[in-house]
Image 1 (cartoon, rainbow, N blue to C red):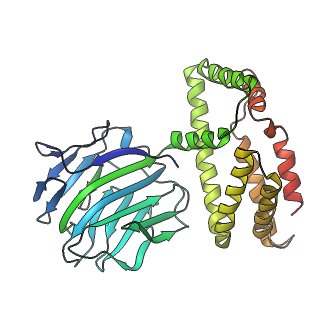
Image 2: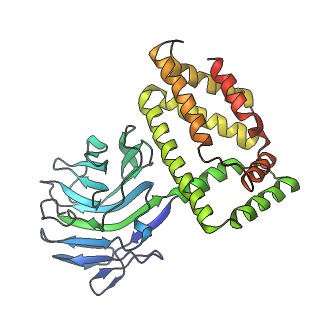
Image 3: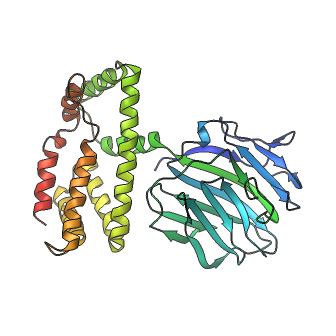
Length: 356
């Protein structure tokens, strides 16, 4: 997956009361309260100590997925210690018993994994991370090892409201203030553009375009750019809504059949190999059938009907942004030049489904 670094604080460059961000977004952290700054880390010396990163532009307001990495050295752990928290969006922290935890706010509850029996050692530097894929999976790492994960996370995330706070509870009292040192902190995001970029890389990977296909790609680009701004914005908003609906759909599939997560990944690998390398299409079809049979259960059963409804939902999502007339009809023609395999997609897909 492609990630964009939107805040990078090595704790090596300071200016006035700010820790300087190493990215081009200038998401500097304001130093507040009893914080001692040193080369490579800061020390929290009181409950009022905190670093605040204002959400001043859309660089910190367009999260579809999240990854937070930090270097932390807590003193004796006697309470929850916040590492990084986006107000009303996400939280990454150490529990009072030393467990590492990461959560996403769904509007009512804070949901996420913890590290179970694995704990952070006081008075030692630890490299920690919290990653959420924007669909349903979140994971925690401690010194390079995965120590916690969860596959039933909320689909999609709320954006940080106003600020992201390091080592403290955002805009609140000092009950969660870190005691100890905080080193390099990095915040990364995936937004809709990154998801689209990854999709295009998958679609075009290792495939040589013929001159005719290259011309078709150029014409598609020209037709989109020649649209009126309002028309392009409408397409962009529809694509965003489509991505949200697809994310929620994938979330439901994962949570519905937890035992199928490994099968789903194996299916993805087989489909990518068949698509990207133009190899072993029968193996991909077999993997697809295996996954569908596991999802569908006995024909006519409750799972079978649920599966059939899921197929119809997938087809509806695939076509929700379709429009007729020029230039949309022409763009569809050109897409079939670039990806001729799509010409019988729905027929082939329904045939596979009906064979389950």
